[in-house]
Image (tube, rainbow, N blue to C red):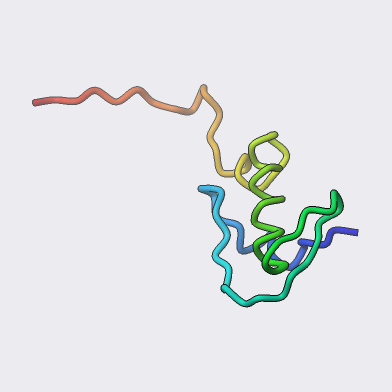
Length: 73
């Protein structure tokens, strides 16, 4: 079961999730305590994106589609 399914659609391409500052402590699977569930999921989703298995990767274009930009003065 995905504990963070409700937050996945809100996770931005830049690896950010906007969370409230409510104090409702929760522990993740490793036992680490977080201020609230949203902040726990923000940490989890950011780590997934860094490993390449998260939402962040779907918005990146393949290297073959990227163009080189030249700055003109």
